[in-house]
Amino acid sequence: MSLNTSQVASSGPDENILLEIKNLSKHFEGLKAVDQVSFSIKPAELIGVIGPNGAGKTTLFNLLTGFLKPTAGEIFFNGKNITGWPPFKISKIGIARTFQLVRPFRFLDALENAMVPHIPQNILAKSSTLRNKAIWSLITVDLAEKKNYPAFILPHGDLKRLDIARSFAVQPRLLLLDEPFSGLSYEEAFRIQRLIRDAHEKGMSIVIVEHKLKILMKLVERVLVLDRGRLIGEGSPKEIANNVEVINAYLGTEAKEYG
Ligand SMILES: Nc1ncnc2c1ncn2[C@@H]1O[C@H](COP(=O)(O)OP(=O)(O)OP(=O)(O)O)[C@@H](O)[C@H]1O
Ligand SMILES: [Mg+2]
Image (cartoon, rainbow, N blue to C red; front, side):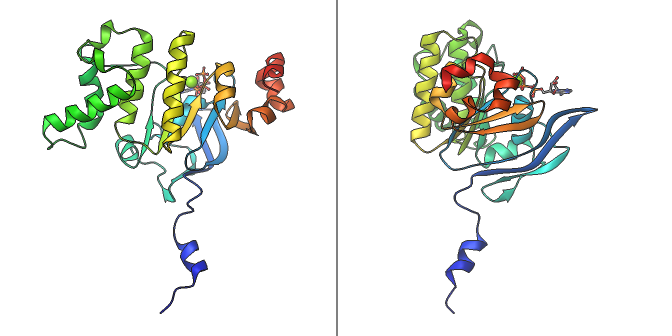
């Protein structure tokens, strides 16, 4: 029996969509932290999420990674409904994140910190395999030479890159970075931009939440804007800089710099 091509095409997941969220909401008592947000992300896209403090950006990441369960709505990854899945299962299918505030295991060294995400997947593997994978992720972020330094003596810029090394450990298809440039010098921020560009060139989809718009608006292809839990704008950096609702809610006079 020959298969009709349109039947084949419609039976599997849409290969042009990696992540799709539909009417996603998270309420904390009366507060609508995320309010009926819908959007999708293609494979190998580089996206920025911006908006005022308290707009719901970190909450959105917490929903996508299973740290919070949505009040309503659905999340699809690679065509699979992953709504309500726990964090370990979500990381296993290829979604990784970093945190707004870096939280390393302070008394483990950099190598041990980079090994932590491998442990659940490699509990029976030889520790040398585990070390090699962790060393590879430290090399990727330029931290291999500090692999034996305890985390508590590493400067903030190194800890930000260590957090990224940990997120690379699961070889994610989608990486969510929550304020990767916060508190960094120009040079440190530049190193992280380079890491992001390299990972993106290798085909990783990356979503960056950031207030440092001078960096972000040049780096990303598309921007989503949240305000009080709602998605109020979506488009290229240039389109966003000319969006009146976004200017009023967040960008103000700064918009001119990105238009
Ligand atoms: N676990 C929680 N319990 C109750 N309220 C919460 C919780 N997490 C977040 N909120 C509230 O939800 C709203 C959105 O917070 P969120 O941290 O997502 O904002 P954000 O856009 O990441 O802000 P920022 O730019 O300051 O990091 C805020 O009003 C916050 O106080
Ligand atoms: Mg936040």
